[in-house]
Image (cartoon, rainbow, N blue to C red):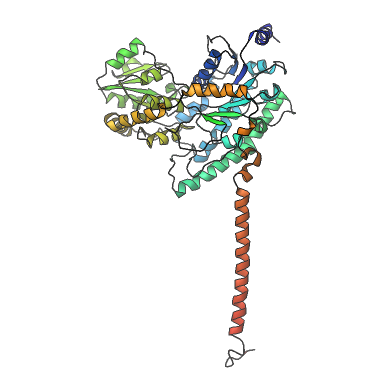
Length: 525
């Protein structure tokens, strides 16, 4: 064990007055790091000591936060699947969309257990005391055996990824397939029969694949590090006492939540800061306003094929009264840029959204930016690329605050038409401000709510009374599928018996009708 690690552990034991909290934030995503970072910083401000194992770290963390880096998670090899998605000739199939994240999560787990960061935490003494473990379950249960290693302190699950479809398998509860469409579908809550006929088996397929293939694969990977005596990660995730979901009824479909599932959408949104002077000058010099163009922190604009880059620039050129701020991670030749387009490798998007001259954001539909746009009251043009982005489009489109374009079939005419529609029709801005007011109108700030529940769990570690009974009943009994099956079986048996009795009566009546006594004129052999 290194001297640095020993020193850190001793300091934790001797000098820390707040609770000792371990955060397993293992998803390689800068945007998710920002999301979980809001919680981390606030907890440190409350006097707690935070240990974060993550592929992302802050260079100058505030006092009370210690990072363990999961290194080498942003290599070209790890980014290759994103490049392939943007270069593909067409969209993937519905089943591929539904199951894509399982392969990603498995690959991430396999890579991370071999890192020095993972081994650093693994080398902590088993009796090291953490008062609470916060687990970002977006990336799956790969790191949950650490909860078992550290003697099962209270476990809190968090995600920046809406309300994942696998939540009932982890927390109990139900999947409302009649009106909650799967992320792979371009449907809203008002699904017709055929859409529901597709939605129901997609959920079922995902459940079966997760439990029968994904979970055993993760078990096999983690047993190489933790030993074969650890419980399955499926059992470990069911020990989650509370879970945060990144939802709010101003945007998301209404769905009942168990008492131990807390909605915290918007917790990462802060009061806006001034825009850098060079960007502000470009914004203010526009005639009608500006449009932000960004593909987020995972998909990169410089991953786009050259033909797509040219398409966007040619369309932007046709809106001279608007200026376009494009988050482009490398350089484009200045000669190729229209005068109304400015590229930057990074943009303070949340702050720019708060500027009165921002008229729309054109982006991939990532949830965190979607929430920021709604919070700031800015209309959207969404071009879904994968994951939950189709549903973010459908949710906002039904509110009248967005329009969508298809990345793979996109034409200059379609993009120009959609941009013109959102920018020139004032109804989109009116609706955006209306839903912004609904999103903001909460009894407390989402971050304050999150921290309150975290500290509540520290005060009340034994809170099984909040858990859904479905967790103990199991999927089949908890959803009354056994009762439904019994009733179907009973009705089927009664129907079969009734048909047999009816057939027997018909045959008997027929014999009586055609007997010698009733038909004396007919010759019987």
